[in-house]
Amino acid sequence: MKDMSLRTCVFAVAVESYLDPKIPPVAHAENDARKFVEAWQALGADAHDCVVLVSGHATVTALRSRLKIFLQGVQPGDRVIFFYAGHGAAFDDNRYLTAYDTQSGDLQATSLPLSEVLQALRHCAGGQVLLFADARQGGLPVTRGMPPADPRLLADDLTCFCADYEARVAFAACQADEVSFSSPALRHGIWSHCLIEALTGQAPHAFEKGAVITGASLQRYLKDEVPRILRATLSGPERQTPCSYGNGADALVVADLCEVLAAKASRGDSALDGLIKESLLIGEDVGSVRSLRGFNKRFHQEPDRHSSAAGDFIQKIGCDDVKEHADQVGRQVQQHLGYKRRDVDFSCGDGAATIKTPDFDVNITISQDKDDPGAYVISTEVGVIRRSSIVKDARFLEVFTQYCDTLVIKYAQSVDVNQQIDDIEEVPELAKYMNYAPGGAWFKLLLDHPRIEITGTRNEMTLKLLEKRDLKTLLARTESAFNTFTGAGLTLLSPRATGSAPRQRSDLHG
Image (cartoon, rainbow, N blue to C red; front, side, top):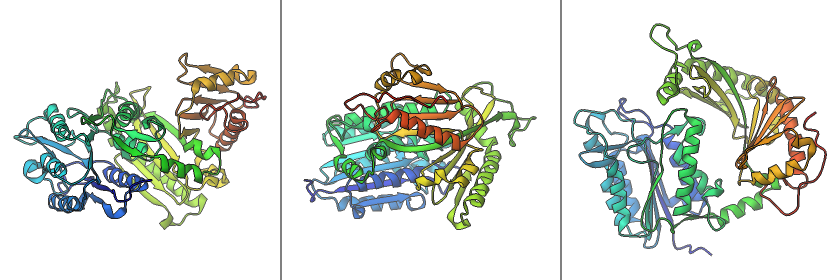
């Protein structure tokens, strides 16, 4: 039983937009903070013990005042959690957290010294203090007298903060000489997304001893997962290295998810509910960068290599194309599915657009083609499906058949790919269509009539139509694939249970 007298107190700050127009926004910082706090509330934190300050509410004065009041309410033994998402800055050998009213011409005087925050946390009554910093450096304008950031400063500050108390631990999104990146598709900072996935039980690789997240297991997961998502998001050489600090960080229990996962399991209607974390419908439209509306033949050159600068350039000149694409999708969604104007939320900017409906979300992004540096890719992703029956609605299929040709099924728990390969090889009708990595990292099935490529990894299964787009066919073949792979009880897709796959004939190939 939990000791109900011990509380979890959360103070979260997210500065996404700034009063000074010269300071660029920090994409998705507000969503990071809100979802972070929701995760801790699901783990037992009371809403009355949580403070969330975002953008216009996160002025320097408000931060000082609210943090002081917050910490005064902490009792001995309470767990204190501090989260920050926004721009970080360095000046005169000191680190700063920017606030809504930070001024680019006077960063030192109009930002909050990190040392001040650490001093307040150090002297609070809490028995355990966790600090999570997604301070996204690299976006602040450099002003006269502002020296380059010393990579040692943040590490020194956080190491010193944690040094004299084993129950004081800090996690940072990146090293001080790196940049913390965000993902338009995830609508989160990449590090914050991974952190939230762990806290909500969506990342089994962050667990130890069943469903316990320790400092060591969380850091291992973040160091593995953040670079993986970064590589999938950007095509350049960017690096982001999550860091942790504290003498007791490895052994410290960050979160115990046993009750959360048990509650999820009790709500599940079937084994499938526990297996699948998320399903996405995805499609890509590719074209020459020179054909984008914002491309000026007199002043612009087509990129000849992959880089973050090229990706930013394509996002900038492709804004109008993304908006046109999103407008078209939005009109068709409303017309075919009968949503009223107030039922659909549309937002667009920075080369990305989101359409939220009562039944699902659509995210549209533009990026550099990973295979051709002179080409762009406009991706359409349908996810956050709130009503599962919508994907079988003929009106839904009519809209998205023209945009999507791939179904991605993300697992709630990692699967044994080697065991999947072994079981597929026992079905001759499937084995002849299969290829796989020698180490068992993935397998592929290339099926005929219609041509569908099925790719399986430990974290997800992808089914892609290789002929004309036809969602009805894709979904029907997916159902056939699941019938073949799962037999009685998700044998091939779930973590290995006793027994072997059913020996049955597959109709997947035609």
